[in-house]
Image 1 (cartoon, rainbow, N blue to C red):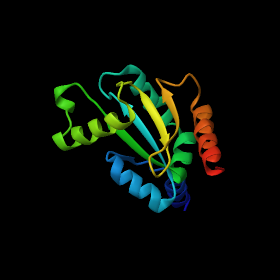
Image 2 (image 1 turned 30 degrees about the vertical axis):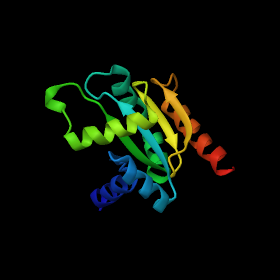
Image 3 (image 1 turned 135 degrees about the vertical axis):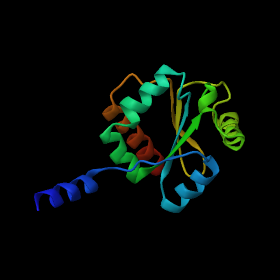
Image 4 (image 1 turned 45 degrees about the horizontal axis):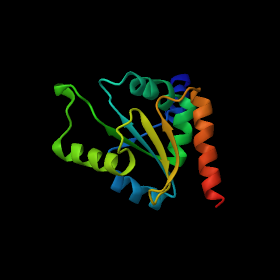
Length: 148
């Protein structure tokens, strides 16, 4: 009985933050689910601050809990190692997102967008704050936008 309870507790408390890789589809999903989009530009195999941001902020349980209910997460990744290269189609999707939202090629660069793709807030580089404070900033950005 204890094992079943522990298993159910684990399933109920585990968060399934899903990263999308197609911004157009993410916008459609955000409209359908009445959510915001968090778009992150990263270099997953070469950018130290990008790697830290994913580990220290995006993988934090406090952030994940908020993201699961409020955000559509989009990762536009630009790996450099041959073994990590993305498909041509994915590269084109990421480049199109960068042309629109990150023309200067900043890494990491994170944007909070509404479902229409309007920029609500952005973070240039690894935020110098805790995951909890970053989560609060995202929530505040959403609140301010929803009050407009």
